[in-house]
Length: 565
Image (cartoon, rainbow, N blue to C red; front, side, top):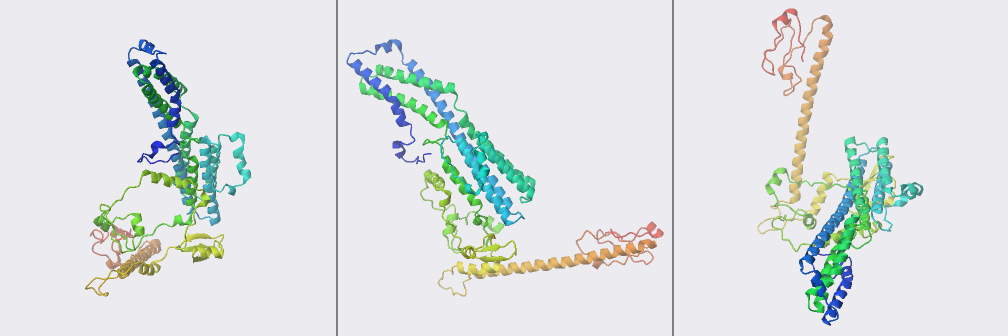
């Protein structure tokens, strides 16, 4: 793959990957023939009048040239479509398989199995996906190169010998694909992937979509451009190369003009045919082919990122997070890019409006291409170590369940080999001193005393106190509601127990009900309460709808009682 800048004129003189030198080389014989024929005609040693008798009008040659140009442009457009079909299919294949692997790693983070079992599953998954991607590119690309794998030494060599067997020749992708599916199903059966089936089904859908895109890219390699069309193109280009020197020689009066126009005409037609041939199969070792080796390196780095502990440290929100009303009120005024936020001092920078941002000279498209190329060029083990000095890490021992917190370097020196590292989120009390250190003091203004200036950390402490008071108020309200509910439930249980004891005697004694005992806002208290007719303990109205609580006359006559509910 050639990375170039389309905004400069330096690409005109670039030789690598260009079809122009070959087009000039193929047009040289026709150019020499045209120059020789015109020279002999000017010396009266040869006459081109025969072309005038055979072709009295230039419309015949013009029609032939038009048909040839149309045929060549159609083939070039089809080759261009095949080129982008292959590139799109490979990128979609890589995206689908990376999505499947990242989903499996995310599912394993919530597993209740041992940490060693989870890490064994994750490490096996990323290596199998790297092997799957490498085998697919090896089957697609028609090059003799060894694709870099991700720690292939971690697998048993005997288990991988089946990939070199004759019976799996051309079917390595399908074999590794089946290994991954068996690996997933095995861990589902063991309980390591304890996620709902609809969520896990998405992983198999991503795997299947990646295999479909692999076959779409493979069809570009397996099925060439139709032979009949390619043969006709070659024949027409050859006829054009033979006829053009004679026709142009009869139209010009000098040797140099005859040679020049012949070279231009033949070079254009041959160049279009060479472009179509160059784009027909983008997998190979040509300069314009897709960089499959760099694709494998980029995919390996993406997989390594999935097992990086720092990746799972989700960014936390600060206490000064804007509410919904503040976001609607500010709009885009307080918007800030990631680069501006990185360079801005904490709590002391005025956000820059997106509409008022002064934009410099935009980067050329080549910068993005070079960034991708830099990712694919270095090997996977040349990555620079990540600075983890600013992180606090807790180590959990699965045997004694004790946590030991400290820096990464200190834990590494202590030799925590089988422990599970995870990042500890600081509490509110721990964040307050950090905020006091990071927040710079406000600038001193004329006429203001230090006591009259509100410190940012004081406002933050006041905000935290208000939040804690609100939390205590909510807790008190919840406790009061719980006590009311408990008293109500005890009252109901007492009534039911009294009914059960009196039911055998045929006479139910319902204790008098007081309105103050009924908890307000509940739907469990009955709207019609029956009382003992002999005692005459009834209340006037119901607290639900205001209806009378006195039992009907026919029930009082029979001595029947209506229990609550």
